Image (tube, rainbow, N blue to C red; front, side):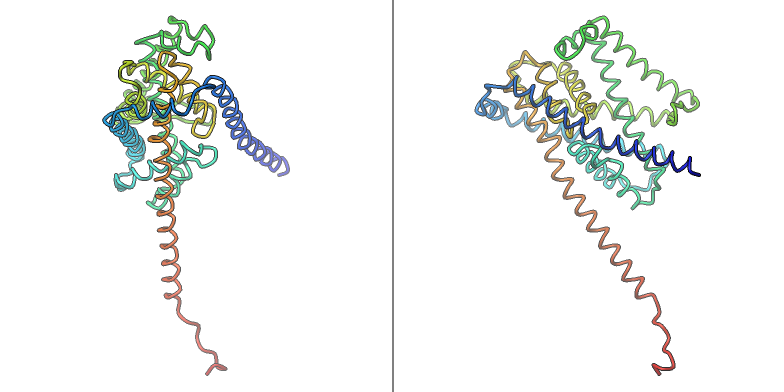
Length: 349
């Protein structure tokens, strides 16, 4: 008994350490990236950035806004795909879309370590009758769908143009920026996607990695994943692409490749919202465009993809929790009314 209690205490201690260390790593990433960004942007005036923001034509802002809607619609599709995988069909598209929007808007800004998507989804989907094991599968499949899209598009851009990693030669070892190495890496990424497709089509047994077990989904679910995940990333990258200076003709594949690298680095850093890390990688990888124009595009991306959805998600959470609280009070009042009064004692009579 003592040994089991010691093991449990050790596991709790390790869990507490992990919960503490990732926010610290994220904070250090923000500080380091901020210091490097300050060094690289030193001397740039506010008027330069404001001039770049006002130089974007209205129709390009509209296209960026449309790209944002495409990205969040694809994120909602992630949840829908996971629910179909679980055989859950009674939840409306509207509820799924609002839940997904709120989940990603909060986790993108605050960080999964502080306010995880699992918590948001648990509060929402338990109200629709789902259990904790089902929600755990849903969260895992949504995360895997995003990773699958990143791997797929990363493989495509590296195979199509293996010289793209040259843009990150200041941040990556020279071996990785070599075009031959980059193309091989791209082929390996596409090979992983191909193995996943084969496993789904042939109904292969689950892939077990330590305690994690990956169930291959049905081919219909897998096909939806291969469409939804790239669509979300294409929409997010489109926000930046449409507000970059059109006269400089930045190609979409370059913007997409830089976005994938920047977004991945931001996620790995555990910095809330990838603050500083995302900007550092993007500015480093786009030396052929004026820094003020790139910074303006990144500000618009944060406004459209992060800050506006974050503000709206807070309203959604408040409305949801208010409705749940009101429902709980109504249930308690109904229960009190249904309880019969105690019988009168002889002394009362």
